[in-house]
Image (cartoon, rainbow, N blue to C red; front, side, top):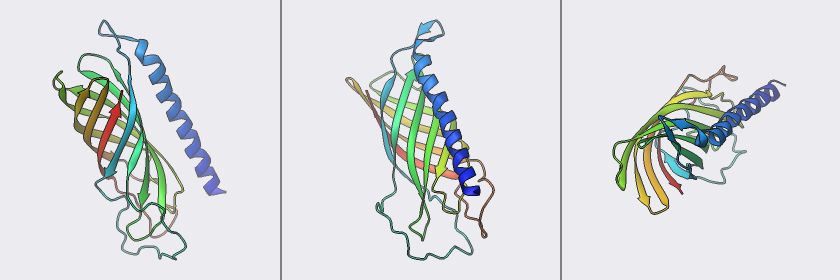
Length: 205
């Protein structure tokens, strides 16, 4: 019963977050900012790999029973992105990133959706454009496997936009600091890492 309540709460949070994201995507392109009309949004995909681990080491880890196997052994991040310019050098990017949190010595995974909402500032307006970004991140988790990951954090990053006619490639490195995990359901507790680093590449048009 408790698991069902947690699952329903996660679905409710996911619905609310995506409602806000869709409202931003639909409404923002038509709003005037600093006397200008916003340009068309960039829409694309994001792929990457985590640099840091997912679960904190435990002094007394839970025993692995051998009942779970991994279908995909590699760690990855993938999803979609929408970026809306709000000035010559400033834009807002919203991503929906699918990521599986993995144990160090156990094939079990925790399924998460990360939704960073980032302000991006470009340091030039040439073909090769370095940028800095930052803003809040939200996270919804399922298939918890004894964890209770936090739902909120702060993300900062640096990267470069590479313009290729109608396409844009944006490699970046991001750091996210999550708030502390929610109440734990097992002892010893299974805690996710609060510091997260990812290498990402966005491809949009």
